[in-house]
Amino acid sequence: MLLKKLTEAAGPSGYEDEIRQVIYEQVHNYADRVYTDSLGSLIVEKNGTLPGPRVMLCAHMDEVSLMIVQIEDSGLLKFRPIGGVDPRVLVSKPVHLGKNKIPGVIGSKAVHLQSVAERGKPVAIDNMYIDIGASSKEDAEKYVKLGDFAVFATEYQEIGQRCAKAKSFDDRVGCGVLIEILRKSFQIPLVFAFTVQEEIGLRGAGAIAYRINPDIALVIEGTVCFDVIDAPEHGMGTKLGRGPALTVIDAHMIGNRNVLDELRRAADSDRIPYQIRKASGGGNDAGRIHTARGGIATGAVSVPTRYIHAPSQIISLDDYENTIRLVESFLRNVERGGIRFS
Image 1 (tube, one colour):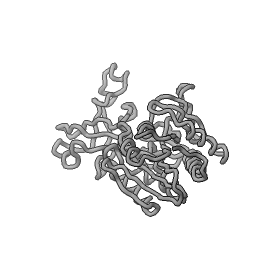
Image 2: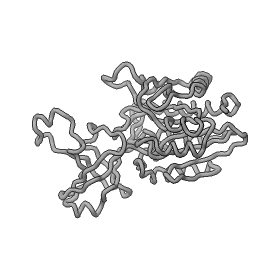
Image 3: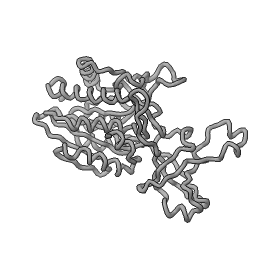
């Protein structure tokens, strides 16, 4: 299954080789041109039969992860986060290290050994380590080296009522949407950008937007879910199973009004459920894309994701499928000349 292949592949920021190859194998037979840029983003072009407008669809390949920064004499491995990782969700989680996927477990001092003061606060990353079962520094160095990455070892699984859990729906769910759209036929020229290093500063998207300079861009992303216990009533307001979320504003972009309106019209005309992402915090590749060159008309469509940036994330498969439907409906209207920008 596509989502299983995408989410179980490793792809930390700056180490996207494995996930890039997985995506390449899924798309190269449907493309007129496939290539990578110097940062490692994968770019897939379909020429179409009409002159335009040229639309770029974007999703990032990288995932939050960890980097090994010290090997102790005991063989335990100290690490630092790559991207926004909440330390409170790390202890006891299984991980895979490096390209050889060496198994390990994130550990810390057992509760029996902690002081009363230590028990009253979350364990800091400086007090954690990864245990690969090595007996010494020399033993550990046979399997890992400084700078190696670690990703969560969560397997994809469908659960409950049309839900799925995996380690990296942010943003392999967006990559899945792009792949499903890429397999369809359109008359307008389309560019599919699978970007790198989004989790550490939207870096890959800026280079691609400058290079491609599309007329319209649409970013497909995972976003925070607010339908959990003790979440504030205000804010993003996104909920699992209520459809894709459309961005009005976030920390890096005010969504292009014409693109947003067209997304709403497409959803309404095809009876696709959707919700509005209301918060002004957070952000995604759209923040870099919309200011490239002379400015690019950009919108963002997000799949609500519970426990985002955590070892196990949950999405609604209905939301995923409705996002595919919405993006296709939007592109069909662009194809008919329903939305154009000079």
